[in-house]
Image 1 (tube, protein in one colour):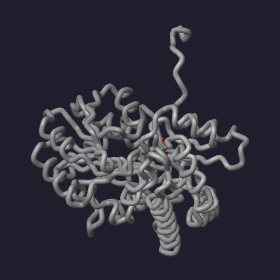
Image 2 (tube, protein in one colour):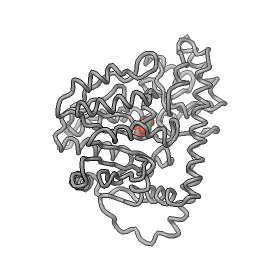
Image 3 (cartoon, rainbow, N blue to C red):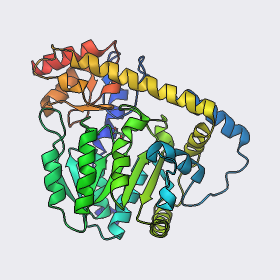
Length: 392
Ligand code: LMR
C-alpha cells in the first residue's frame, strides 16, 4: 500500500541548511533559513536561557505529563509582553496554550478556524512558504493578495480590496511584525486602518507573531496585534519564541484566542486542547519552562531584554550598511534600510540565485529571500560584490 505514495521534494528552505553545511568554501555565506547570527556568525544559546536552564535542571523535580495546554506559567508569562495593559487577559476574553513552536500555533489557529466554519484564508503573498503548506494540509483554501509594492512599502490597496471582497466564512492571516519574507511591515497608521477594516468587514484575523522584538522593540512590534485585539471581538494569535529567545530546535510557541466573552474563550480553548491531543498530545516542555523561568525572574528578564536589544541593533546596522551600498549591480538595496526584521526579498532570477550559490558560495532561498542576520560587517562587501557580479 505504501508504494502508492508519491515521492515528495525536501522542504526547499530546510534543504539549504544541508547544502550550505556540505560546501567546503571557508568564505561561504548562509543567508538561507531564518536563524539570527552574531557579528562573528554564531547562533549561541542566550545567556538568559543558559541561566534559566541551569535553574530548571536544579529545581525540576518531575517530568510527569502536564496536559495538552502545556506549561500555563509560560503561556501567562508571555501575555503582558504580547497584549500589554493592566489586564492582558481582558477579563478572561483571552486565553492561550503552549504549542510545539510557532508552526504548531499556526496549525492550531488554522485548524480551529476551519472547525468554526472558515473555508478560505486571505493571505498577503509572498508569505512564509509553510503558511500555504499548512493551509493546504488543513483543507482550507488560500486566497492570495499582493503584500508589498515595488517601492518596498505595503500594498494597502490590495489588502483593502481583499477584506472588502471577503465573505462571512473568510479569515485573514496577518504577520504581526517583521514580515517573512519581505521585511515590509504595516506602519502604525496602516494598522489603525486594518483594525477598523476588520471591525467593519467581520473577517476573522489570524495574527502570526513570530519575530516580536526583532523589529523596533517588544512594545513597538506588538502595536498591530494590540490594535486588532482592541478593535474586534475575535482574534487567533500564533506566537513563536524561536527567534526572540533563540530556542529554534526546542520548539517553543504559544496559541492565544480572543473571543467576545470568557465563556466562548473557554469553549474555543477546549477545542484547542482536543486538536492538540489529536495532533501532538502535549508540547515539549524544556524550552517553554526555561522561558517561564526567564520571564518570572527580573534579573534574567533584564538579561533577555539586553540580548534582544543587541540583536536588533546588529540587524539594523547590517540593514543600514546594505542600504548605503550603491555598488550591488542592478540590485537596489536602499529599501532594506526602512524594512524590518531578519528578511528581505531581492529581485533576482533563479539563474542569478544559483550563480550566487555556485560561483560565490552565497546561499539564499529560491524566492530571493535573504536572512539579513546572516551577514556580518566582515562579509557584507563580498556579498555586495557577488550581487554586482551576477546582476551587473
Ligand atoms: C524561516 O522562515 O526561515 C524560519 O521561520 C524557519 C522555518 O521554519 O521556515
